[in-house]
Structures are given as C-alpha cells and as structure tokens.
Image (cartoon, rainbow, N blue to C red; front, side, top):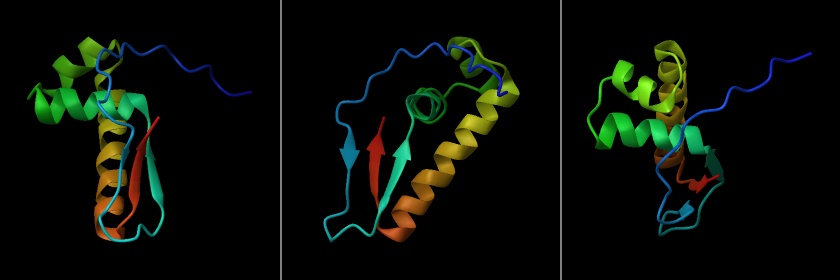
Length: 87
C-alpha cells in the first residue's frame, strides 16, 4: 500500500500549458503543478529552498526533490527537443 500524497499549497497558475520547439518535437516531458510552483518560487521569486518549502507547506528535503525533478525534466526537454506539457 502506498502512502497518500500530502496536499501541497500551490498558488501560481501557468499562462499556458504547453511549450514546444519551433522544429518538430521528438517527444514530451510532463511538468507537474508542484514542480512548476517549485521552479517559480526558487528560480523566479529567488526564495531559498527553506522559504519556498514553507510557502508550499512541505519539508525542505521534499522541496529539493521536487525542484531537482523539475530541473531534470526541463533539461531533458531542451537537450532532446521535446515539448514541455504542464499538468
């Protein structure tokens, strides 16, 4: 039996749901809402991980894992010419 997912406080909604390269995309990466929020708080708002974790109402280690996952997905999409879909 898996552990139930804990509610995360998400306040930012994306302006669009899909980013794709001008050339033909070779696949897709799906960025979840919590990953999008983590990127916004850390990269755009410039918050430290601990501060951002408090805003999302999660622990700092969990925030770090979410942020690392988002960075990896975006890097794979850019390097591989993939579409980024936001869910």
